[in-house]
Image 1: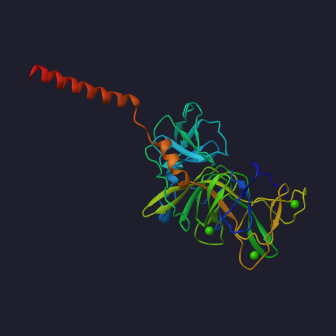
Image 2: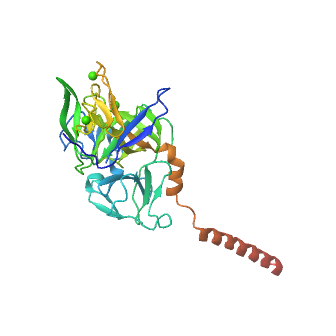
Image 3: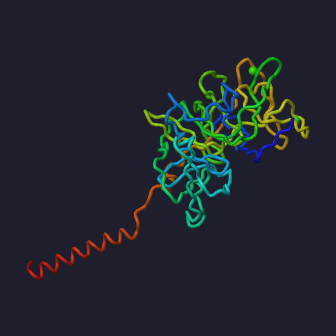
Length: 336
Ligand SMILES: [Ca+2]
Ligand SMILES: [Ca+2]
Ligand SMILES: [Ca+2]
C-alpha cells in the first residue's frame, strides 16, 4: 500500500541518548489513536472522572487543527500547520458544553505579523479580538517525566491492524477526520531537538487506560499534565515516529504510517534518509509521539500574554503627582 504524508518528515538529532548518535525521524502530526478502541466516536466528548477538567474545555478549532486558550486574549498552537485561512478560533459546543462561540484573530497583532513565533520551537501564539472567559494555566516547572498526560487532537481514528505473523503490532493510521478526540498517556522522556525541547510519550500495550498516540491531524492540540488538583498545559502536539516498512527497498512505495505499540520486526525511516531495522524481541519496542515542551518557553510565552500597563496610564500617574506637588506648594504659599 502507498501512504502519503501531508507534510514533509523531519529529522532531528537527539543528544540525550548517551554516546550513540541517534537520528529521530518525525512525522509531523497533522489523530488521537487509542489502544483500547478503533471506534471513531469514542473519546469525542468531555473527559470525565480522572480526566475531568483536563483541558478539553480550553481547546478550540483553529482551521483544520486545534489550539489551546492560554490567556484572556491568546491561544497557542503549532507553527508547522501554517496560518489557517479561516482567521477564527472556535470554542465549539463540544468543548464548552453550551454552543459554538467564534472568536476572530487579530491580524494586526505583533506589529502586523498576526502572531508570535516562539523562536527555536514549533510554538505559535495568536491573539483574538474578543476575550475568553477562562484559559489554561501553563506549566512552568521541570517535573514532566512520569506525569500522566491527556492530549487532544483532530486526526483520524486508527485503521487496519498491522501484524507480523499471528502477532498484532499496532494499527495503520488514517487521514485526519477533523473530529476532536482525547486520549491519555504518560510523559516518558524529554528530547532536545532542532525545534527545542520535546516531551515524548511511548505508545504502550496498556489496556483500559485510554492509552493514546498521535497521527496526522493532531498537530497543535494541547497536552496537559496534572499537578495537585490542577491540570496545566505542558505541551503542544508536534510529531510521531515513522515511517515504517516491511522492507528497505527504495521506490516500491511500501512504506506506511502506523501507531505501533511494538515496532520490532519493522524498518523505520524513509527512502530519502534510509531505514533502520528494529529486531523483533519478546519485549515490545513502542513508538513514541512528541509535543513541544511549554515549560522551556514559558517565560517568553508569559511575556506575550501578560498585558503591559498602558504608557498613557503611567504618564497620567506622573502628571497627577506633579499636580499634587503644585497644589501643596500653592497651599504652602497661600498659607492654607
Ligand atoms: Ca505509555
Ligand atoms: Ca519500501
Ligand atoms: Ca516483539
